[in-house]
Image (tube, rainbow, N blue to C red; front, top):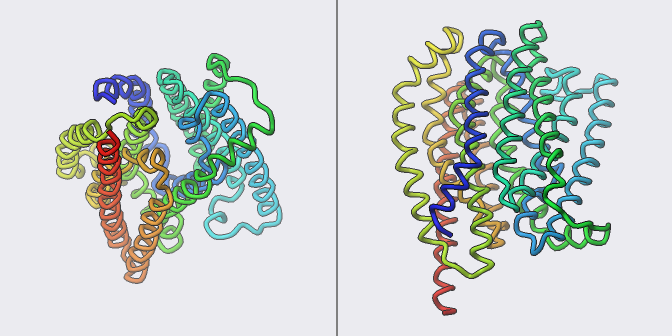
Length: 420
């Protein structure tokens, strides 16, 4: 697994993503003048449910398409995941419709009102796009992944702006996001036949699902916990604090953690495919991983330091006075964001070595620590304290995870040497 090959494939996959991310972030200069912090607070609540439920809708079977032994098995597990996603979303739609019609919406769903009906279709489009994305990833079709992500992000940003101009607030944000994701889904489907996937039957799909049961048992459970705990500030703090404060935190996360997660997704996809091939062929892995981590942090650390000092004036200038409170949240989040970049990029390690069970325990501990951190902030009636404590425990667990991922690669390398 050579670093040059990783860099080339990363550049291909990142090219479209960077453009899409740039367009999405640039749109905020306009969108923050159309939508208020409270509108964004509501959208953050909406999207936090999407990030949690989309994991249940596919049970992370999309990851199995990359490590499947052959194309037939990859096609079978992808088709199983698509059917599972459809069934789960139909159940969600039935439940959401029943709760809305009977006026029985619980918790933060009350604030969403009729927009709760947008959650099931948004989960469906996100789930199918993820399945297609990893299927294309298996065949190294990074240009197609970049195109789909680019089209989806761009159309979503444009639709949010248009709906806002038409006065459809705050609903324009979730509606625009849902339609943008649907567009990305269509782009994936248009080129699906080019993969030349072999036909499969129900028996193939069941066999593939059983063989890769570690993904729903451990990866999906772990990612569900991770998504739930990462979105706790929106799911829990919004109950006790002003929605505008939640919106300010949401914008701070958008301009810090979201670009990092995009980069992590790109790095993890490329490293996952390359790492799985290296392990199947019994080739060394450690040197490339260490060089990747070193190069990544040589760039990331100076950028995080610059962001720390420039956050105040940049946010005040770019978004206006009502958004200047974002800067303090940006500074609180930066240590976590920096360590997340390394830890999340190495998530492929647990999948290729089938150590998802231990990884799950890390994330369970992280959830417990995050709940405790937010509980302290709520008890003190201090939103900023809650965010700072949340970011601190998140940074520490990200550091521990990164060290554990690297340790597994070291053990693999030692085993290779003993066998030779």
